[in-house]
Length: 113
Length: 115
Image (tube, rainbow over all chains, first blue to last red; front, top):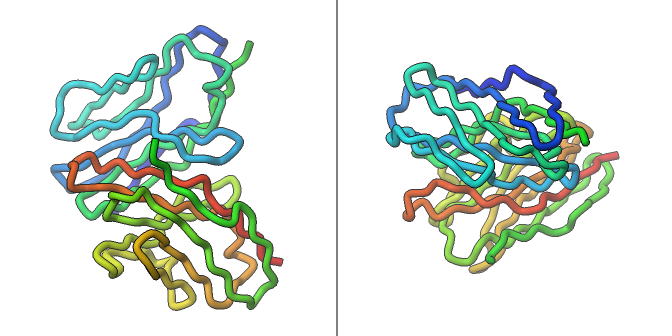
C-alpha cells in the first residue's frame, strides 16, 4: 500500500525565519508526482509546489522550495522568510499515474510575529 | 484564472437523508475527483472519474455513494442515506493529465453536517 507520512504534527517559526516541513512516502512506482498543499483556516486546498519524480532538480516557487531525495523517498518543504500568512496546515501528497492523490496527516505551521 | 466551484458551501442534513454535492470543474479538464476530510484528519481520496465513468474508487466509496456528470459542466456526489460519520468536508478537484502536470485543482469544499 502507498503511504505518505508527515512526522511533525505541529511546527512554529518566527516571522522572517526559515522552516522545513518533513515528508516521507512509500511507493513501488517509478514515475510519480509529489505535491505540497496549504490549507488555511478557510480549509481551501491551495497548491504550493510540485515535483516530478523523474526530475533530479529540486522545485522552487519563490519562497518555497523542496528537498527531494528519491532514493530515501523523502520530500521536505522549506519555507524561507516566513510570513504571517503562511500560518496554515500543510499537506504533503503523492500522485500516481491513476491520478489519485494520497495525503499525509498534515503539519500545522504557526508563524509567530 | 479558472477555478473549481462547489455548492453548497455548507449542508446540514438529518441522518438517513439523501444529499447531493455539486461541483463545476475547470472547463477544459478531463479528470474529476472527490475527496473528503473529517475534521482534524487528513484528506482522503473517494473516487476519480474520467470519460463518464469511475476510473478508481476507495474503500470508503461504498454503495451509498455515487457520482455523475449530468451535463457538460457539473459533477455531482450523491450520498443516498447519510450517516453521522459522513460529516466531513468534501472537496471536488479536477485535472488535465494530458498536460502531464498531474496537478489537481481543488474547489473550496462543501461542509456536510449530518445530525
